[in-house]
Structure formats: C-alpha cells, structure tokens
Length: 79
Image 1 (tube, helix red, strand yellow):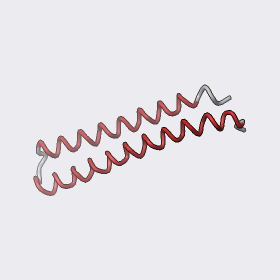
Image 2 (cartoon, rainbow, N blue to C red):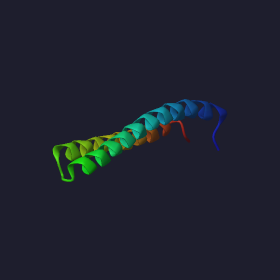
Image 3 (cartoon, rainbow, N blue to C red):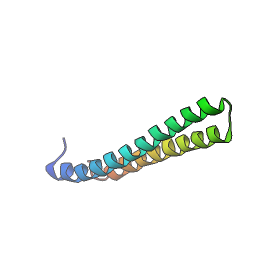
Image 4 (cartoon, rainbow, N blue to C red):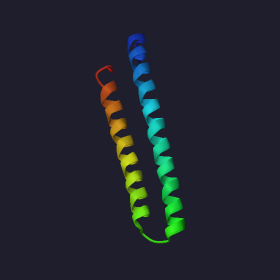
C-alpha cells in the first residue's frame, strides 16, 4: 500500500533508474556485439577479445551498482 506522496517520489526515482538502465543495457549490447566481431575475426583470445570482455564486465558492474543505488534510494520512502 503506497501513499500518493510515496508514489510521486518513487515515480521520479523510477524514471531516472529506467533511463540509466536503458543507457547501460545499450552499452552492454554494443560490447557484446564488439566481442562477437572480435571472436569472429581473431579466432583467439586476442587483445581485442579481452578488451571487449572487459567492456562487458564494466557495463554489467555498472548496471548492478545502479540497481543497488536504485533500491537504496527507494528504501527511505517506503514504510
């Protein structure tokens, strides 16, 4: 049971999180494409494959951090 005041506060938080998540998911998608291209071209664990893998891990980590920040930002609003 969320009050109207809580709902208004949460909507802004949700909007920011949605935008951030979409941004990070797009970076993750592009990094995965880069990895696929590098694997196809290099056919080995090359510096390009390693760099693309690092980008994927970075995006995944940022997405996880953003999700945790989102949860903790909502926490004080909820009763």
